[in-house]
Image 1 (cartoon, one colour):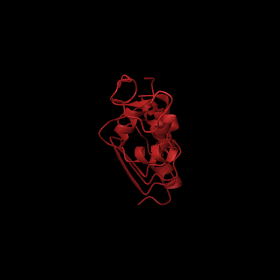
Image 2 (cartoon, one colour):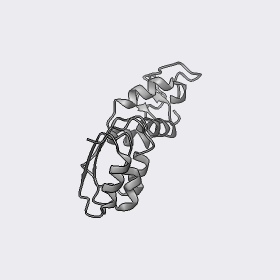
Image 3 (cartoon, helix red, strand yellow):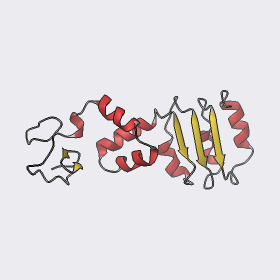
Image 4 (cartoon, one colour):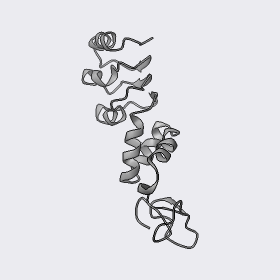
Length: 150
Protein backbone atom coordinates (compact mmCIF):
# COMPACT_ATOMS: atom_id res chain seq x y z
CA UNK A 1 0.00 0.00 0.00
CA UNK A 2 1.40 3.41 -0.93
CA UNK A 3 1.77 6.32 1.47
CA UNK A 4 -1.50 8.20 1.86
CA UNK A 5 -3.69 5.14 1.23
CA UNK A 6 -6.24 3.94 3.72
CA UNK A 7 -6.15 0.31 4.71
CA UNK A 8 -6.61 -1.91 7.73
CA UNK A 9 -3.75 -0.25 9.58
CA UNK A 10 -5.05 3.27 8.94
CA UNK A 11 -3.20 5.80 6.84
CA UNK A 12 0.06 4.69 5.28
CA UNK A 13 1.53 1.37 4.38
CA UNK A 14 0.97 -0.60 7.58
CA UNK A 15 -2.13 -2.40 6.27
CA UNK A 16 -0.10 -4.40 3.77
CA UNK A 17 -2.84 -4.72 1.15
CA UNK A 18 -4.11 -8.03 2.60
CA UNK A 19 -7.64 -9.46 2.77
CA UNK A 20 -8.55 -7.36 5.81
CA UNK A 21 -7.95 -4.00 4.13
CA UNK A 22 -10.71 -1.44 4.51
CA UNK A 23 -11.44 1.01 1.73
CA UNK A 24 -13.62 4.10 1.94
CA UNK A 25 -14.00 4.21 -1.84
CA UNK A 26 -13.01 1.28 -3.99
CA UNK A 27 -10.08 2.06 -6.24
CA UNK A 28 -8.36 -0.11 -8.80
CA UNK A 29 -6.63 -2.07 -6.02
CA UNK A 30 -9.48 -1.97 -3.50
CA UNK A 31 -8.07 1.04 -1.65
CA UNK A 32 -8.16 4.78 -2.10
CA UNK A 33 -5.79 7.60 -1.39
CA UNK A 34 -6.64 10.48 0.89
CA UNK A 35 -6.64 12.71 -2.18
CA UNK A 36 -9.94 11.08 -3.23
CA UNK A 37 -11.76 12.12 -0.05
CA UNK A 38 -13.80 15.32 -0.20
CA UNK A 39 -11.97 18.27 1.35
CA UNK A 40 -14.96 19.01 3.59
CA UNK A 41 -14.69 15.54 5.18
CA UNK A 42 -10.97 15.92 5.90
CA UNK A 43 -11.40 19.44 7.29
CA UNK A 44 -14.29 18.38 9.52
CA UNK A 45 -12.24 15.53 10.98
CA UNK A 46 -9.11 17.62 11.48
CA UNK A 47 -11.01 20.47 13.15
CA UNK A 48 -11.90 18.00 15.93
CA UNK A 49 -8.21 17.45 16.77
CA UNK A 50 -6.17 19.40 19.29
CA UNK A 51 -2.96 21.12 18.19
CA UNK A 52 -0.56 18.34 19.28
CA UNK A 53 -2.68 15.80 17.36
CA UNK A 54 -2.74 18.06 14.29
CA UNK A 55 1.06 18.26 14.42
CA UNK A 56 1.30 14.46 14.69
CA UNK A 57 -1.02 13.98 11.72
CA UNK A 58 0.90 16.55 9.67
CA UNK A 59 4.10 14.50 9.67
CA UNK A 60 2.50 11.31 8.33
CA UNK A 61 2.16 12.30 4.68
CA UNK A 62 2.10 15.34 2.40
CA UNK A 63 -1.68 15.34 1.96
CA UNK A 64 -2.35 15.33 5.70
CA UNK A 65 0.34 17.98 6.17
CA UNK A 66 -1.46 20.24 3.70
CA UNK A 67 -4.85 19.66 5.37
CA UNK A 68 -3.42 20.19 8.88
CA UNK A 69 -1.73 23.42 7.81
CA UNK A 70 -4.99 24.64 6.27
CA UNK A 71 -6.91 23.68 9.43
CA UNK A 72 -4.59 25.81 11.60
CA UNK A 73 -5.76 28.88 9.72
CA UNK A 74 -9.32 28.34 11.02
CA UNK A 75 -8.77 27.47 14.69
CA UNK A 76 -10.56 29.81 17.11
CA UNK A 77 -8.10 29.02 19.93
CA UNK A 78 -4.45 28.05 20.16
CA UNK A 79 -3.29 27.07 23.64
CA UNK A 80 0.40 26.16 23.92
CA UNK A 81 1.10 26.98 27.55
CA UNK A 82 2.60 23.50 28.19
CA UNK A 83 5.56 24.08 25.87
CA UNK A 84 7.85 27.01 25.18
CA UNK A 85 8.16 27.12 21.37
CA UNK A 86 10.86 28.91 19.45
CA UNK A 87 9.79 31.37 16.77
CA UNK A 88 10.70 28.78 14.11
CA UNK A 89 8.23 26.32 15.68
CA UNK A 90 5.59 28.97 16.36
CA UNK A 91 5.58 30.46 12.86
CA UNK A 92 3.85 27.49 11.12
CA UNK A 93 1.42 27.09 14.03
CA UNK A 94 0.24 30.68 13.66
CA UNK A 95 -0.61 31.21 9.99
CA UNK A 96 -2.84 34.17 9.09
CA UNK A 97 -6.12 33.35 10.84
CA UNK A 98 -8.97 35.85 11.15
CA UNK A 99 -10.85 33.37 13.39
CA UNK A 100 -8.20 33.18 16.14
CA UNK A 101 -9.88 34.55 19.28
CA UNK A 102 -7.80 33.01 22.08
CA UNK A 103 -4.03 32.55 22.34
CA UNK A 104 -2.26 31.08 25.37
CA UNK A 105 1.47 30.74 25.06
CA UNK A 106 4.65 30.22 27.07
CA UNK A 107 6.98 32.91 25.68
CA UNK A 108 10.12 31.70 27.48
CA UNK A 109 12.01 31.20 24.20
CA UNK A 110 10.59 34.18 22.30
CA UNK A 111 11.90 37.73 21.93
CA UNK A 112 10.61 40.90 20.27
CA UNK A 113 10.93 39.34 16.82
CA UNK A 114 7.78 37.31 17.68
CA UNK A 115 5.58 40.36 18.36
CA UNK A 116 4.12 40.39 14.85
CA UNK A 117 2.96 36.78 15.32
CA UNK A 118 1.43 37.46 18.75
CA UNK A 119 -0.41 40.74 18.12
CA UNK A 120 -3.40 39.51 16.11
CA UNK A 121 -6.31 41.91 15.47
CA UNK A 122 -8.91 39.16 16.01
CA UNK A 123 -7.69 38.24 19.53
CA UNK A 124 -10.18 38.62 22.37
CA UNK A 125 -8.16 36.66 24.94
CA UNK A 126 -4.38 36.57 25.29
CA UNK A 127 -2.44 34.80 28.04
CA UNK A 128 1.33 35.03 27.75
CA UNK A 129 3.62 33.40 30.31
CA UNK A 130 7.38 33.79 30.92
CA UNK A 131 7.71 37.03 28.94
CA UNK A 132 11.16 37.92 30.34
CA UNK A 133 12.72 38.23 26.87
CA UNK A 134 9.94 40.48 25.51
CA UNK A 135 10.15 44.26 25.91
CA UNK A 136 7.47 46.89 26.52
CA UNK A 137 7.13 47.10 22.76
CA UNK A 138 4.84 44.05 23.00
CA UNK A 139 2.31 45.97 25.11
CA UNK A 140 2.46 48.89 22.70
CA UNK A 141 1.80 46.64 19.69
CA UNK A 142 -0.99 44.76 21.50
CA UNK A 143 -2.71 48.06 22.29
CA UNK A 144 -2.31 49.25 18.72
CA UNK A 145 -3.32 46.05 16.87
CA UNK A 146 -5.65 44.15 19.22
CA UNK A 147 -8.66 46.44 19.56
CA UNK A 148 -11.07 43.74 20.81
CA UNK A 149 -8.69 42.28 23.42
CA UNK A 150 -10.40 41.90 26.82
